[in-house]
Image 1 (tube, rainbow, N blue to C red):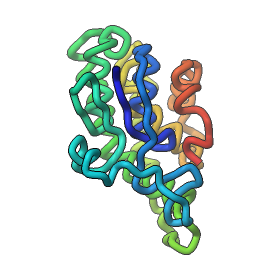
Image 2 (cartoon, helix red, strand yellow; image 1 turned 90 degrees about the vertical axis):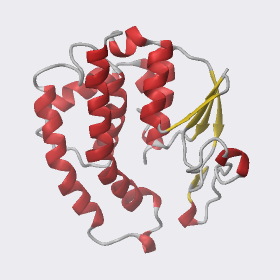
Image 3 (cartoon, rainbow, N blue to C red; image 1 turned 45 degrees about the vertical axis):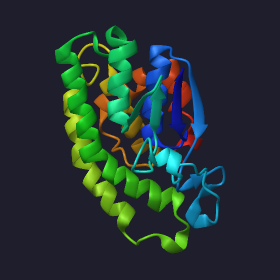
Image 4 (spheres, helix red, strand yellow; image 1 turned 180 degrees about the horizontal axis):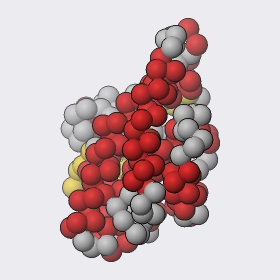
Length: 221
């Protein structure tokens, strides 16, 4: 049995849950977090889900972060690594056409998302959603939006040439990148003129796994 530790509001956990749904995998899910709980961020006085700072969890993931998986004794952390592992092990045809080139292209955009989108999205979600107002930094959200825009334009130009990030079919690359770009839209940080991204998001939104693990606004806001 596959076991996952994470939280539904973690975009990194969302990547893994979306992948499991696409691969039709059963799993046991355990809530875990050092900073978030059922009532929000710890800065507001909410209690965190916990678990990640215990010795037994650190023995699996020394970073005390989520997600972490245990697949019949194989422990893995870092969401893109988990997504790639699950795709390779359980759904290579569905998630990268069983092609090393498609897989490499997908990984390219997954890495790009972590490098260029995630740092700005982290700032936005902290400043606009999670931190209590007294801990927010004036101008930080506006700065993050300004920095995010040119990277989204890069993705838009790419998607104007093909329907999905790694080619003609949906792949694991759309999972990591799609979750991030959808969150940027909910945080009002997706420029209106990026029509290729809009069309791509509409294709992703038609997928049942997206509807279950990514679409609900409460998972982001």
